[in-house]
Image (tube, rainbow, N blue to C red; front, side, top):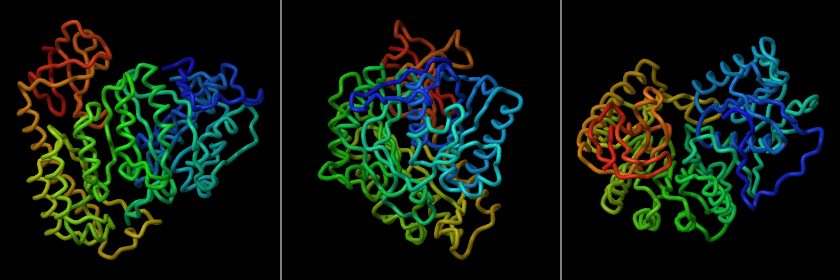
Length: 464
């Protein structure tokens, strides 16, 4: 998406009056967005601000006047990736024409003081609640070095530059998190729950639909908690509001906290046509002592009853989940309990992470920390199990007819194949559909297709 930034402007988002000293006047920015989709929506808001000020996007960091890295620090590996990326981009201040290097996001929020000393190459740090002030630090000759305070978020509408696909976008429905899981750093970085108001979200989705978007993917650290801090509205009300927006065919709910999954939400997902039968619900573990130590607020029995209820009441529901292995004190028996649970439940998609102690969290200071070798061994065992489950479930789908959103040409064979996704495949994290025969369909269409082959995590389909 090089060149002029295509800003999507909701009617509730006032077009800012930008002072002349903050105008980009055709200058170029190279943007690197790391981490989760929630971080990505912040990047898209920053790009919109810059687009309104006349900045252009460059795919080549060597040709950019300013480079922005929106960082992640959820676990140690994410922090390392962020630092490595910053150091890589810093080289373009000498080998390219970059005048400024700006680091935004969670790593800037968490490690600002240390990074200010350790990364003198960085001209400015911007925290998680100050991304809307990006123009203050990218302007030529800006004297503002850092904007890192307590997270304070924009309550009204925001312009966006969609960076996913021409047909699909992320929509962040809330900021922060009301939960206090002992392993998680997010509340420290993002603050407490702050639901974005319903009218603002509806206006944003309408603007996305007007730009050709057909699928919206709802993200938030605990999406099921939306509305609990702003009045009588709850997540079912928001889903009903989205269901009535012309042009939006698929609405996907992601990051559902299992302890907050009530019957009203299940009924809403089951009855609304646009809500796809897909749930992203990180369970983290199933052994009761580990769940208690994690402060998950849910038990094994309650989790199993919830899964049974979801599958019995939502036709064809696909469930993605995630687990942490190697949590402090996890015994062989407790890991086996988790292994048996995954084997019995046959989830559609599973992510497995080894416990990564973060100093600012209670879990980092629990006794009985496990060796990395044990953590990795348990992760490998669980992933191997799930790979077999996924392969078997994919084979069972051969012959099924499914709706597929055609997104474009396949990157490996663009002259022969197209690429798309089923309603049960979330963008970027699940597999895709390889389209061998479209029979007159075009990019952006949602068409019924027959599954003719399973290909690893992907499905091979042709139009019926």
